[in-house]
Length: 293
Image 1: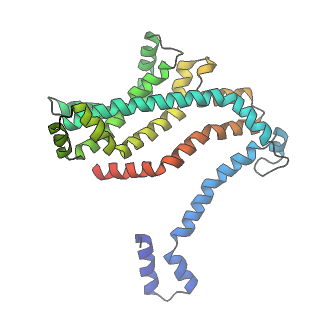
Image 2: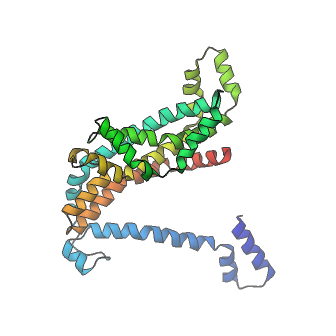
């Protein structure tokens, strides 16, 4: 029994309430959860309704369901505009996620399993980067990208994203690596395993939940970022990520409300599917990380 339900039961036992009141006092979290679910579903339903409308239908009834439905027109039109951008976003998010996991886990393993002069000081300096707002590093990052000749290339997105994701990855994964019993690594070394093999075959498999949290956070950050791609990609349409494409899309199709909303729905589907299939891994990773912290 939860704390809320226990408090409700204690309140009921102290007085003689009617049966219906006793029931709702004991089970009040249920209607609260139902209301929250409804509040979350309403915007999704409104988005689906608007995606089926022409401009005239939207002006007449912006929130209700109107007929005929124009899904067969709005979604194909939106897909033609955002399909290349979705592919670009998938490439950027996937490659940067792999880079963050590989380099971040390697760095975290070094901080967790090795002793060297100034280790704690360096780790604190790395963690201090979390307190620096990203906007403060915008100009230096842009100057570096421009000086390296990466402007309007995919590398202008990949390298900064991989570098920016290292701090959180090192923090989370180092905390977990410290908790792994050292006997595992000592036994592997006795059997002739190299240090990299200990990392690859012991540390990484045991940290898959934390790695899943890092991966999801990285994908969310890169997928939804609009300012940096808009600044570094410029007018090169073939490299637009999905947020930039939707921004340009709004300017081009300002009167086609249904097509715009269809584009938003298409852009959100990859993240919805990602979290639907990885939600258990995400929750387990947060739980494991919370216990270790």
